[in-house]
Length: 101
Image (cartoon, rainbow, N blue to C red):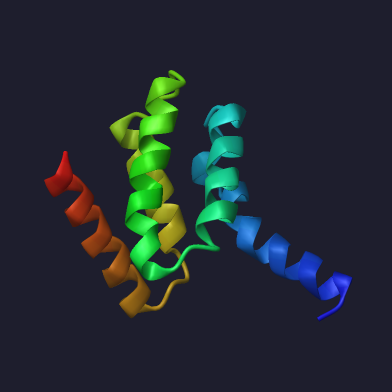
């Protein structure tokens, strides 16, 4: 794939950040989420949960916190356009994270 294809793919992967529901979110939070999304996309299924837990711990220690409303909005935006099986995986992962709190 050439550079143009890679840029197009990156733009499609980043398009969730331009969703209108996220327009009022702190740009620093969106930048952090973009960084996490890029790093997380390189993780295998077995590595994603430890990665997310470490990321949550790091963001908490840096003082950056997301409200429940912000988290719900981010999750719903990320689900848009995903196949039902992928949405189900996201939901299962969220349930696991809730149980671990």
